[in-house]
Image 1: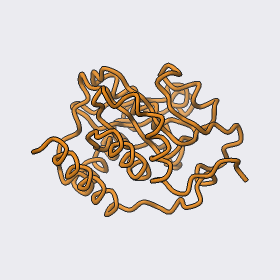
Image 2 (image 1 turned 90 degrees about the vertical axis):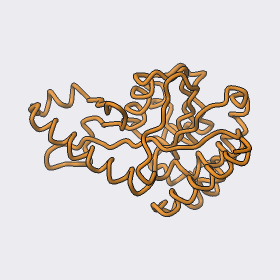
Image 3 (image 1 turned 90 degrees about the horizontal axis):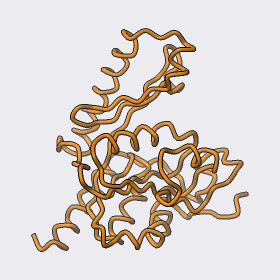
Amino acid sequence: MPELLYRDRRDAGRRLAQLLMPWTGAQPLVLALPRGGVPVAFEIAQALQAPLDILLVRKLGAPGNPELGLGAVVEGDPPRRVLNAELVRRLHLSDEYLEGEMARQLACISEQRLRLREGRPPPVAAGREVILVDDGIATGGTVRAALQALSHAGAARVVLAVPVAPPQTVAQLPLPASDIVCPLQPHDLGAVGRFYDDFAQVDDDEVVRLLAQAAMTARSVSGA
């Protein structure tokens, strides 16, 4: 069994929040990768009295093997595509396939935006300090795509906060070590869920509820 267990995602968020308190004065924007990252990010946003939103990212799957990630597409204006160029070359994939897969995943992002954000536009990261949050990282492909998209969007600084990730993955992320908050870095990760007592699936209703609760708290803090 792992040496450290989180009770659930909310517990993991509270522990991360303690490590992120130095960023309170920067008035950061907290962005979660849904769905699992939202309960973690909610606790961080509450502790830092920061706004909470989601960043929608979809994996680009290989032909006949959608779980094999060719890269990812991240919502934005315009959307940002990040590819694993070596894998694309090895599989001899055509531009036509990649464009079609990107269109399919962008359609999924549009549906998610309607369900989870009720059609609101993507968050504006330009000029902002951003804390990107997920509930754990295995290979890191989705997180890398999100980080690159935020950089491309002009974020002033991006801090990644995750409860657990293997050190080899952390070392390959496009961020300085000082901007990565990850208290648990096991070499034998296995599955992220091993490090939680409760790793039940997060459904859309919970995401919508937490985003609404965070927005209400933000309005109360601002006096709006």
